[in-house]
Length: 95
Image (cartoon, rainbow, N blue to C red; front, side, top):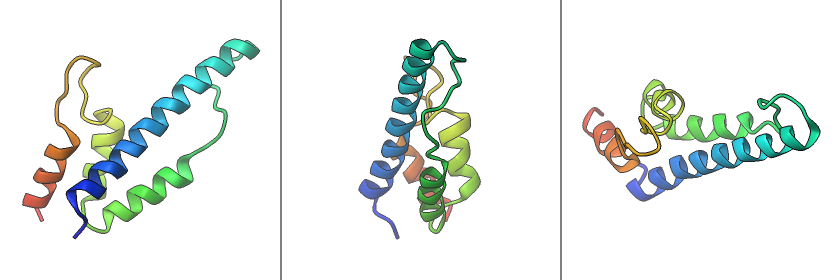
């Protein structure tokens, strides 16, 4: 089984990378006067590989829903719906 610490660190790395990508894309879009959804580079292969590794232990749909639909468990910048630690505990219980 994957440890809670490794799980949390992996999900957090995804969150941080996607956040940095969004900021960088916005800066580049402003500098070059292109659409705000302009992407510097594509991290999908790496993101999908991390999800694939986590999906060995946990439900892929739950992981993707948490990361990409719930925006890493956040309803808004001020409110947290479910922390990554809570997600881990919930997923462990459903195994």
